[in-house]
Image (cartoon, rainbow, N blue to C red; front, side, top):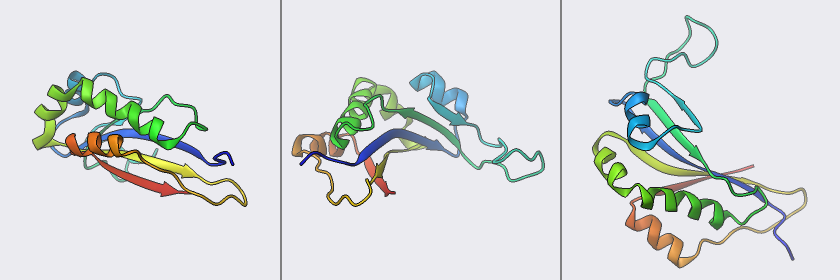
Length: 131
C-alpha cells in the first residue's frame, strides 16, 4: 500500500551570538531567516527576536519518502562540513520535519540505518511534528 502521508523537512540554524549576515556569509542564502532584534510580528512595538535564524528547505516533493527529504539536507551539511564545524560553538543546528497525515490513513515512516549513521556523524538532531 503506498504511503499516503506528505512530508517537509528543513535544516535550521539558530544563534544568540551571530547575526544573520554572518550565517549567510558562512552557509549561503537561506530559504528563510531573521536576525536578532527583528520584530516577531508586524507591530513595531511588539516582541523582538532573541536569536538569529537561518533555514534551508528541502527540494523533494511532499509525496517523496521522508528519508529522501532528510538525506538531501544531510548531503548539504556534508558538503559544507567545514563551515558547519566552524559555527558549532555559536549555533544550534537541527533538521525539522513535518509529517502531514492523510485522512483515515495509518502508518509511519522509516529512516535507513545509513541515514541515521550520517546524522549521528554530523551530530544532527531531527525533530518531528505530526499534523
